Amino acid sequence: MSDAEPKVVILRPEATRAAAQGMPQFFGISGQTAGAKGLSMNLTAFPPGGKSKPHFHRDFETAIYGISGKIALYHGHALEHRSLIEPGTFCFIPAFLPHVAFNLSDTDPATALSARNDPAEQENVVLAPELDGWVDADVAMLKAELLRAKG
Image (cartoon, rainbow, N blue to C red; front, side, top):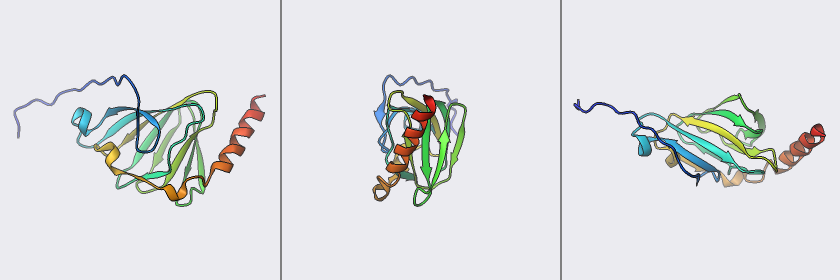
């Protein structure tokens, strides 16, 4: 056992970087940035109309907390299920479950905090390009419904 005392790490990312999933993220806690051994945590900054690439996380679970905006999360092996992540909403995504996320506003950004039991963060993201575009028509209908409801 080392005599070195564990240390607290404070990070304040100045800018977003593109994640493997295609979304801008403020990369926070991970094995690389803070020496974490069992988790990672980031802030995803969806631009207006932004969406992730369809993907899953190999061997690791994900937790998401909605901070701002409305994010549609399509999930399942054929993206057959839809969930809405809004401010104050917690979401759990099991390992290996394909998913894709869309900011439902074309004028306002949306943000979500995500955590995984994976300190490697991006190394275990597996893109699923075969699912790209599968739910675009449904997203367009959902956006139109939200616009009608607004006004």
